[in-house]
Length: 246
Image 1: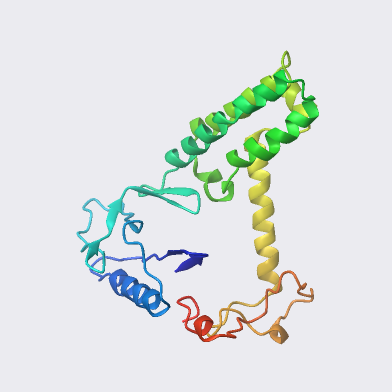
Image 2: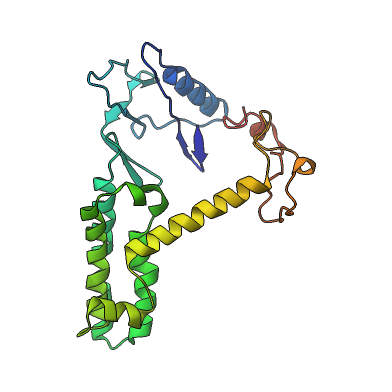
């Protein structure tokens, strides 16, 4: 189970001839929400089933207060579109469409005489950031043609900012690299940070999700902003009865 602000996601891995407990999990979340004077929006709740078996297993529909939860083929979770076939076509085309619409603003600024250096910074902040959103999740899973679709957006932006130059020349003038190279570098840096963090702290405990600070066996000191070895502190009744803490 994962919770982010007011968004809660739950997953279950079913093997052959096993029974689903997702409904009981959903009932538990609904009961917790009711106890805390909140209500689940059943119309916004979706069920996504991922199965690569020859025969798709017949599972009972999930319900919330008698409302049948819709089963979908894809769903957006925190801005990331997940498909039931675990492909990323919809996600890539969604961010390509969104980023392409912002190229018009870049053209308007270019016609207004904004310097290329400022246009480059605007592109980095407003367009490239969209093209790289959650790239650590999907970068190594997309085929070449989807990677080319992303790259074409940057090519169009470079033609607007540096007209009359080839793509490679424009990249040098903008002091940036191809999107595919940046994504690979970002993924490597992220994995290194995860590995470093895992090496600094012991595995999570069963009680609070993290070991006490004095059990950190690494020679490196855990900085105050990391707080990687601090246990969860339940200072209120609501916090102690949180669905994640329980």
